[in-house]
Amino acid sequence: MQSLARVAIFLAVLASAQSFARSASSQEAKASGTIIGRVTVDGKPAQGVPVMATPLESDPASRGKRMLNPSTLRMAATDSDGRFRLEAVPAGEYGVAAFAPNLCSADDASEGVTVTEGATVERADFSLSRCGVITGKVTDSEGHPVIAAEISLKRVDPTEQEDSRGGRMYFTDDRGIYRIFGLRPGRYIVSAGTFRDQMFRSRLRRTGKVETYYPGFTDEAKTKPVEVAAGIEASDVDIKFGPDKRAAVSGRVIDAETRAPVANVTVAYSATRQGGPGNRYEDQDIGDTTTNSRGEFRFESLSPGNYKAEAYSIEELPGGEFYSDPVNFEVGAANIEKLEIRVHPCASISGAVVVLNADDAALDNLNSFVIIDSVTDERGSVARDGSFRIGGLKPGKIKIGAGPFGAQKFSVLRIERNGVEQPDGIVVRAGEQISGVRVTVVPANCIIRGHVTIQGGPLPIDRSTRDPVALEAVARPPGVPRSKSYERFPVDEKGDFVIKNLTPGTYDVDVAATYLNESFYKKQLASTKQTVTVIRDTPAQVALVLDVSAKEPDK
Image (cartoon, rainbow, N blue to C red; front, side, top):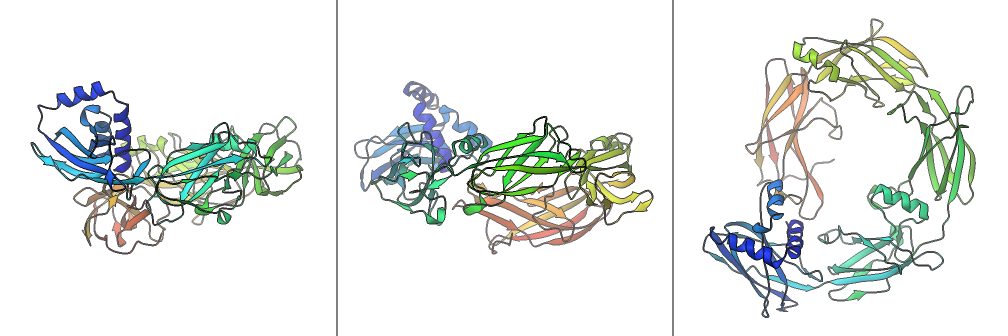
């Protein structure tokens, strides 16, 4: 609610006084009421603070549409006694918030009020205090200012509510100086050099700067938290980047058997270590280039650490008609030369798909069916005559399955190679071109109907939408973990759901929802698992109980 209210406040501040007056007068004839209240700062009346009433909608799309319409907004500034009066407010539900960039409240929440025709809503009061400031300078290893370095903040105490201004981006100016205001009191981790966007991360690699924490550590565990007090400026929070310890890596790509150079292929590297909390990869962990006519490649400016490099073909994505042996290497202070990446020809599997118990509609959709190697995710489309080919395969055991694509879903019943069933998968040798594979499938036309009963209280509120969490139902074969992706189906407001596109068999059915709670932490609800057997032409029925008071399930 608060983030939407702040967006609405910002839009209203930009609107001219004349347009606001016109929109207000146009509402006079409608059923309306009044909202009054008071704003104080450190216990004293606050004059000239904007206060905004924004309409609340259960539907996020409708809410956004109304908040972008100035005629639905009401704004007023406080008088010398800190009091405000919002008049001609159409009847309905509203969020009321006071906004000032240098002021903050204990919880930063807006006041929810209900306006009825002719009524005056009182005590929409706000107690604010002066916010804190963090300022400092970012320099390189030689003391020169670093211009346009991004500054990141993170609160140390995870139990405290995240600062509403935490989504803003802060950069140093042409002197390398930054100043971040509007901060609630607390302890903050301050760092420089983080780029969230891939384009900026590429630029960061070229500059030789890695994320550095105040006052100059690349390890967050060593940093010194900055204490922010109300109305106080925490100054001299200076960050100094370390010296650029980077190296170049060069080599060539060759055919593993003939040792001939392989031209015009992509070589990509990635770091094999992770850094920082939350399993975030370091900023200099990936990159790619293309080999020249002699099969040569070169990476510039890699930071010290362990890496892996592989080659692949752009034209033959996703897997190409060759694969490479991954090459691990370690970057230190010296350049690395003569790195050698060997490529091998890929294998392929071709054959035909046969559909059992199919009507004309299912056969018409066969061309949208995708057959997939469930181990490597290589895939191939099925032609109208049922023929298929999967290329880009490495040696190993290949398990063929049905991809979750197209209007008509299919499920694999049996796989044969030259008339011999392959229940455990097809063994593929390097470069082998396998044919004569027959894949027997059946249309997935079965359904499960179910109902969810909520116990232990109402559904929790999703912090991102301010509405009760949305539930989804899913059916998986027994033994498949929740981490495995399957199609999800919505549960309606009555608790009913229908799971479609199933083949005959046994399934575990549960209901779950992942949402943001009031502390901005992801939470998950999950029902007690229920097993059901599905047969053709007869919908299966399940009844589930979701206890919202139960402990959060294991992920």
